[in-house]
Amino acid sequence: MAVYDPKSMKADEFINDGEILETLAYAEAHKNDAELIDRLLEKARPKKTDTGCVCAGLTHREASVLLACEIPEKVARMYEIAEEIKLAFYGNRIVIFAPLYLSNYCVNGCVYCPYHLKNKHIPRKKLTLEEVRAEVIALQDMGHKRLAIEAGEDPVHNPIEYILDCVSTIYSVHHKNGDIRRVNVNIAATTVENYRKLKEAGIGTYILFQETYHRKSYEELHPTGPKHDYAYHTEAMDRAMEGGIDDVGLGVLFGLELYKYEFAGLLMHAEHLEAVHGVGPHTISVPRVKKADDIDPAAFDNGIDDETFIKLAACIRLAVPYTGMIISTRESEQVRQRMLQVGISQISGASRTSVGGYTEAERPHDTEQFDVSDQRTLDDVVRWLMESGHIPSFCTACYREGRTGDRFMSLCKNGQILNCCHPNALMTLAEYLEDYAGPETKALGYRMIEEELKRIPKEKVRAIAEQNIRDIRSSNRRDFRF
Ligand code: SF4
Ligand code: SF4
Image 1 (tube, rainbow, N blue to C red):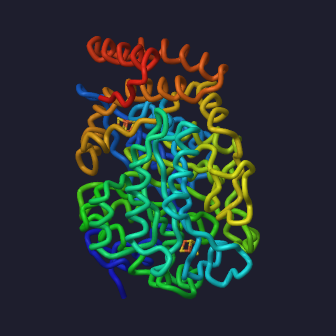
Image 2: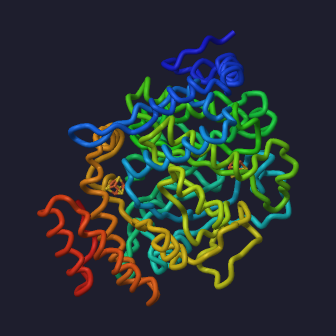
Image 3: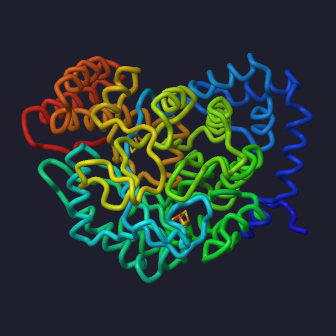
């Protein structure tokens, strides 16, 4: 039987079923232990230092106790601390991105995804490079600067060369004042060699959702195709890092398995990356199973309600304080609003989850990967964020300044990221307002920028940011960054 070892390179040892079951039993036994819960909350709370702020995080076992806890005032305190942590490290900024679906050809049999091989009635589509250009122009014309590309696994239709060509096409398009400055990649688990090629192509984060950490369920949910191999999939992030990719993004598809099991597995994966590579996950995504062609979420009986979902997100924020947390348009405006208060730092906006969706006048549904709950325009999302006190940020500076992996993490852990994130957010927001915003959003945005500029502590940084924003407003000069 596999023994738990976070430093092991074997999936069954760093995501160890026995350790997860013991963790769940421990959490259940201690869920009403108010004294222990108070100690854990105190441990998770951000602490001020001479240079900024630090957070201790929580182990998978500690965080599982909090997730199991049902004492209302303790849960309320978890939410407060989650927000404190988010504000300490990411301030009131929310980074915005959009997914770009390249191809829905797929050889896998994932039972929760409409792109599975046996779905014979979904139209199959793969963008040509000309179509990629057209999609990118449509995204740039909305104001997007950061994309996550998505493609099914298909060595014939979507080989790595196709993905690499798409990445370089995306970076090459500069329509009016637009450009895409960071391309994150969400494609199937692959080889070290292919990860190296992606790194050389200049990708941002490599994202791969585990879907479920429960091996048996994983194998049943992925009955056919290369994705059936649990160990190959689970060990993918280690290969990505071996291939030189510093920033990796984890995620679970909540609803497939028991959420407490997934939560412990997810945190063990983060601990493993930290133990082996010295850097935890750059991002963690929290998608839930949604309706789609051929997919009924009711068929998966581990669905979680909104309250549990919010508690889960708060507990992830407490356990992995430095990670970027992502919520997509799978969720409604109401759920996204609540999630913003418990630690989410990135959201997608105006997403179309179909291949070629952005160039269509109407939102197409025939090739959608999932139903989009939040269907607002990017301008609506930007205005909504500002109305609730968040600065919409189109910043991509860190990656382009070489602040990735452990360099990003050590800056973040020292609270130093605050010295560049805030002015970068304001400058990229000014670009958005100048080039893409509607009149109401523009007026609100500049009022926000004026107020937020005053909050930049360093006079010199403030003066440079003010000058750059004046330049953005009076010329076509763009892409200023700290
Ligand atoms: S989840 Fe990914 S691998 Fe599975 S069927 Fe869908 S596109 Fe293919
Ligand atoms: S400065 Fe870096 S961490 Fe801050 S918002 Fe920009 S890219 Fe993100």
